Length: 401
Length: 60
Image (cartoon, rainbow over all chains, first blue to last red; front, side, top):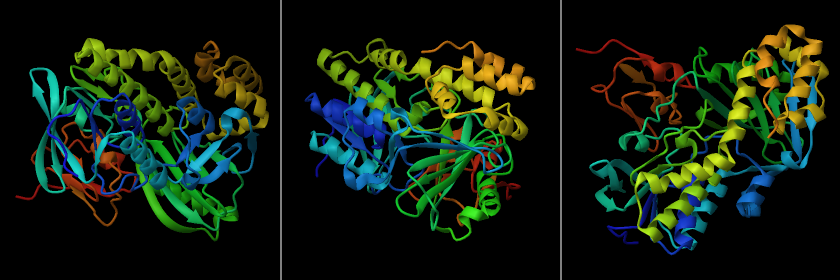
């Protein structure tokens, strides 16, 4: 397929954010080119692969059955003793563990069907600029050095994004505000239709351990830890598996995956003249569970809508493109910042604290926490464990959405 | 300078995200390191979830 020299919009990275953006732009009739570094969209997988059903409904995305590894009815939270649990099953906790190799590729296919030009094994090596304005990209398309021109470039190049930096925005991840994860896909693991989240300092300082079922007896078993924590995520994961022999004695590893999870706060500076950043590249990640797929899809869709409007209006400056940030922050940013406050409180808990919390917490409390209504839960926990007053007082007064 | 053990690396991009000078670039199946740019900050050493990176003396 011959790629053109000039497009209305260039999207760099065809993951969930980029594919949604490209599809939105193509649907509007504007010309769009989506480039991806990988030889195959969706691979290699670098995450737990969980998505919420309510998100797909809100985004109007149909998940193809072949992309679903396991339907999920709820979540199981587990304390540091690996025994105490709280189970929650509400409409908000319904979801899927998907096969991202299939899921992401389908999103790319949908973008192409809507009219986007898509190219893989293409590394973007630089941005083209006129003054402060981004006007295109330099790319290596399967060995051929090319230049592509467009009045808008959208960076959706993930946690390892360098494009935003090339364009002059500061997207460097700080160690403190980033979790680093490693995950084994394992077989011979007893699983239900629940995602499991393990809280403890011992196994996952400033992060958590997860077991996400992927159908029958297969599961993603992973850990994310804070970037300042030594020595490394893999050591924590191996320790967890060694200590959880009741469950994982026969487990065999059929894949190893890893990645970077910017859990600090979403970037504020995500727009410049002719340029937008969306998805994990813009640190748009849930600070509590580290999930980025649905947030990336939402941000990509909004960025795509604004890009389409910009093409229509022939306005490509920062002021116009900032509609993307405005719209995104209106629907999403306050919720993320409220969850960031909860994260900061959780980070202060030691394993005795977690154990005490698991003594009193019930599913209704977790539902309240998920909905951002912290005060009643905090009161209940402090009653049981008064020494947490200081750690939790900061979130007690955070108002409900 | 740093050394990346390709036997351990799963090319996840963690070292790219924390490098302040873009000395690490994710290629499809490996990390390309530019020793000329590297400032020996060791952010990538701490970030790597596989402990695949170590700080070493610069070879003369």
